[in-house]
Amino acid sequence: MDVELSRREKQSLREMLRKGRQSTRVMRRALVLQQLDFGQTAGEVGLNLSLSSKAVRAIARRFEQEGLEAALYEKPRPGKRRLLDEGQSQQIVAMVFGPPPAGLARWSVRLIATEAVQRKLVPQVGRETIRVLLEGHDLKPWL
Image (cartoon, rainbow, N blue to C red):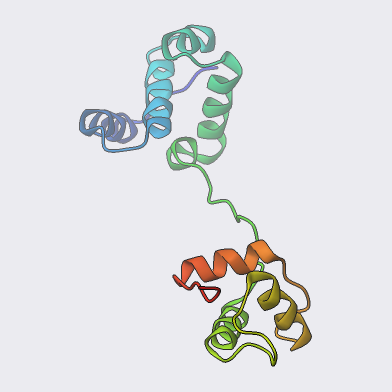
C-alpha cells in the first residue's frame, strides 16, 4: 500500500518522533507512516516494527481515507454508562450520613443497597456499586 505524505505531514511526523512525547502506539503509527512513505512494503514495515502486515495496512488505509490525525490517534471510546447518576450518588451518600433504620446500630453495604431501592432512590443497585461509591467518598459507615 503506497502512502505519500505531504511536506507538512513529513515535518510533523519528524518533529513528533524527535520529541518522543506521545504514547507508544502513536509513535509506532508515526513510524509506520514514515516507513511506508519511504517506499517499504507493509510486510517489511511490519517486520521492522513488530506489527502484522494487516495492522500496517489498516494504519495506511486510515491515513488514506481520513488523514494524518485519524491514522495516528484513536477515536474516543464511549465507555460503559455509569450505573448511578450524580444525583443518585449524592442521595445515597446523604442517606448514609443519616441514622440507620430503626433497630440497627450501623449501616452495612448490603443494607445501604436494600434501603436505596426501598426508598426509591434507584430502581436497582448492587452491593459492589455501593461499595465503590462509598470507597470513592472515603466512607466506612460499618465501622
